[in-house]
Length: 177
Length: 338
Image (cartoon, rainbow over all chains, first blue to last red; front, side):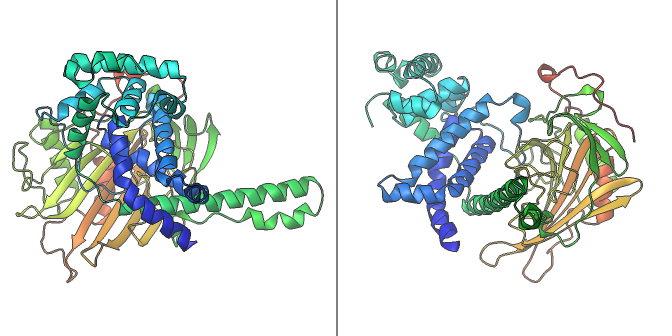
C-alpha cells in the first residue's frame, strides 16, 4: 500500500509543476481553478495508478495519462452549469488572491487567452503551445478534427486581433488546422 | 516542436514563467488521502453490492450482508461525532433540498427563491464605509482582536486590517490578517459567507470541515459524496456540535506543525447556517513560536464564544448578492420556518 502511494507521490511531486502550468494555460490564469483541475487530475491518476504503472512498463509515460485526465477535467468543467463551477478549497488559505496586474506586459497574453471561449482556448493551447496534432487534440477534447480546426482558426484569429499578427502567422494558423 | 505558433508559445511560456509555483506536497498528500478514501468506499460499496446480490438470490444473504454494511468512519476521525439533523423533504440532492436542522427547517437554495450561487470578486475595501463597519463589528464581537490598518494603499507587509475581501479558493471570503509590525503573520481570521450553498466534489466541505452539518445542504458536509473532514495538515483535529443562544454551531479545531519541525499552528473554525440561509464559517488560525507562545499579543480571536458571535453577527457584505444574470425564478421553493 505504501509503495503504491510512494511511487505515485514521487511522480506526482515531479509532475505537479508541469500539470499546473498546463492547467494555468487552459484556464487563462485562473489559478484557483487550475489548482482544482490538477487536484482532480492527481486524484484520478492515483486511483488508476496500477494501470498507469502498467502503461509505464509498456513504454508510456505516466504524464500521458495525467495529461489526458487534466484536459478532460477542463472540458468537463467548462460544460458544467455556471452555478456548479464554484468550489471550496480544502486548505485554509494563507493569502487572498492577488489582484491581476493588468499593466504587466506578460499579462497581455493571459488577458488575450481569457478573451477566448474555453473551447477555442483549449484548441489553441493544445495545438500551438503543447504542439499536439489535430487528431490528438480532437481525441483529448472529445470532438472531431474538423471542429478542432475551426476552433483553432477562430481562436488564432482573435489572438491576432488582440496581440498582433506575429503571434501566429495566418498561413499556418488556418492551414494545417 | 514546430515553428507553427512559435511566438505565441514563447509568450505563453514567458507569462507562465512569471507565476509563483506553490509547493506540491500538500496537493499530493491530498490526492493520496482522497484516493485512498474513494477506494475504501468503492470496496465497501462493492462488498455491499455482492451481499445484496447474494441476498437477492436467497443464498444466505442475511448472514453475508453484514461485512458489507460497515458504518463509514466519523468525520475526520473525530472522537465525538455529533448527530446531524435529518433531511426531511428534498428535490434533487445537492441542488434543492429542505433540511431539518435542529432549530428548524431551511430550504436550499436560500429563501426568496435565490438560486445557488457563490459570487467571486466581492470586495469591501478597508477604507470604505462598509469595510470600516465590518471591522467595527469584528472588534465589537471580538474585543481581544487587534485589527491593524485600514488604508488600501498601505504597505501590504504591514497593513493587516481587513486586507482583502474577495475570492479565496473560489468561495467568497473576508480575510482579516493579524500580523506583527514586521509583517510576520501570526494570525489569520478568515470569514466565509455563502447564501444558497456551496458546490460539490471534489473539494467541498470547506465551510463545514467536520462534515457535521447535514448532508442535505448542497455541498456542505460532503467531500466527494462522503461526510468527512479533510484537513490532512492537521493530524490532531476534533469536531463537535454545539447549541448556543438558540443557534447551532459546528466547532472544528485542528493542530499541526509546519514541515521541518517549524512552528506549530492551530486553527479553530465555527460554522453555522443562519435562519435566513446564510452559511458562515469563521476560521481563526494562529502560529506559535517554538516555545509555545504566539510571540505577540496580536492574535486573531480564538475564544469559541467570540467566534460564535462573529459567525452570528458579521454582516453580509453589500456586494454579496446573486449576480443578476444568474437569477432564476424559483419562487415558492424557498423559505425558512425556524
